[in-house]
Length: 384
Image (cartoon, rainbow, N blue to C red; front, side, top):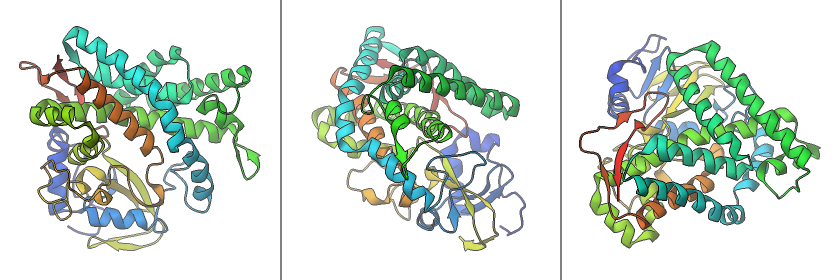
């Protein structure tokens, strides 16, 4: 390794994309702070990533040229908006939303059981992620299909690094938001009727949120959350299909589901990485980084670090939950974690409750997603 800006690796090489987990594990052990043209500096060790998460003054979240509320902000601005965002994920809101979330899940579970064989990602996980997020935000069902098509097109444009297509897709998403905001305003909905209506009437420092701020919040809650939740559902169900004894245990002991879900997603993360930028020169993992360097925090590698998680590929329910970086740590820990945890718990609860077996289809192999996505593109399953 050297400290010049010469590539240590290529995140888009076939060797990496063939098996991201294995590739990142190898980087963590052999080049834990690595430079690439695509990602800048990538951190792979749990210790280094934890340090960056808790040193937000050195490793800034202000990485985007576009407004990003609040995850693209630093204190004190971040603190103000974060306080507002957290009110949407309090236990009372989660409890109130859970019955509707469960209703959405049950519709999809019944459909999957009726077919017997299902391609889980496109026929279950992705529709669930879109429907539940639209329901949480108070968006109309008419947006389900357009959003799914938008997500597929964005994924393809990202893989192809098609900047023109990505710019057009960004404008298309802005149109989704404009239509939704206008609908909520004309409806004259009360502030507690749905999340989008509440945001329209919310204030920061005594001033109403600007349209750009509302759009940024809604963008974060859809573009990011839908892909991550869909990937997480696929990873969880795939793991259960491979481990029938765990299926049986969770059917008999549903109370351990929250811990089991976090542990499965520690083994295989639904989100590969997040970005930071250095605000001054810093030495980390033996490398000298200058000011303004792009940083990538590789969650997948950190949560499989054997220095922190003994036998990291082994499923265990007795691990220290504070070490699991599934939802990040520090001031930028995911504010939507309560919603994500509730959604994933309900999905697995209902799948296990209404089935007797979940198996892979013998003659159809899953296909892996490629960076920047995680999980599976396709996952054929038998659910009975």
